[in-house]
Length: 206
Image (cartoon, rainbow, N blue to C red; front, side):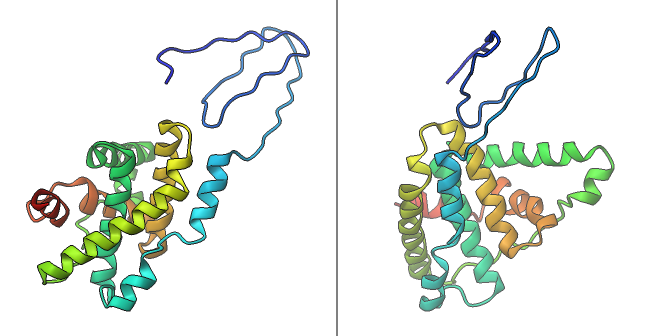
């Protein structure tokens, strides 16, 4: 991981390769013509492949009766997103909170509340049976293990994992939640600590 900016001066005819997800700017000191050649990175190919089956747990959960209505669907989605984020980010709630702040602030002042409402959001309801809840948690962990092994764990840098994980999470949520309410879901169901948080309760009891 770079801790300082890298400055490179290119002479006429020279070429520079930029790895995926390197933010950069070009400054010319005289009139010039630059030619950029873009290619898909391995990371992007892995993400596109993952999006073909973005919620691999769903058919199995429906077959078990764990997902049978909107509340149970939202609960499973919350568990899926939380588990995924925890594999890439040490403090997923803090990262999501900062992500929400960046989204809303980019909308500009008073307009932000209209464009990205952060009203209370119903995060769904788990099974009332603790035994069933434990089975759901264990099954989700298995699905996330497979997702990570075939995609994010194959990406060479953690920086690219974080960037693409945020894109993937937004895409997955937009399949179920109106895109304009995705920040509200993240804010209410992922970023906000809750004393009734079933994920932390189960983890603590392991």
